[in-house]
Length: 136
Image 1 (cartoon, rainbow, N blue to C red):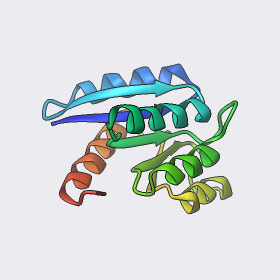
Image 2: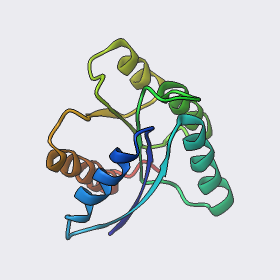
Image 3: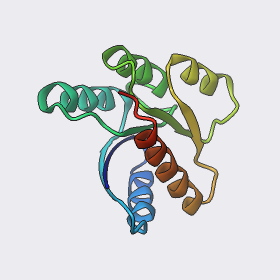
Image 4: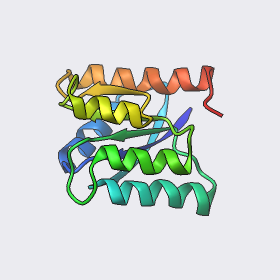
């Protein structure tokens, strides 16, 4: 299955690492769209949804970014699409700001501090479970 993932993170290296580790999965293919801050992530999500009718299967959202942080970006995406499948992708697991993001509508959190093989596996598990239990 081909999955569409929006990665909103101000570190370009994160985009590359995620792409490399997801490419190792032989069961699925992944189309990654990336932005460097929350405002651009909101705009891309909205543009794909409204202009092209393509809902992202998953949004991986960093918390601390320039221009617009991940909490505000999550709030704005949820305003457009209350069933958006947003997971925070952060090193700030268990902090107040991470809880604020979850309260804003994020479905969960993936820790950047984990092994990259485990991160890729968790992403695949989230995507596969969203097909079994669709968010529609």
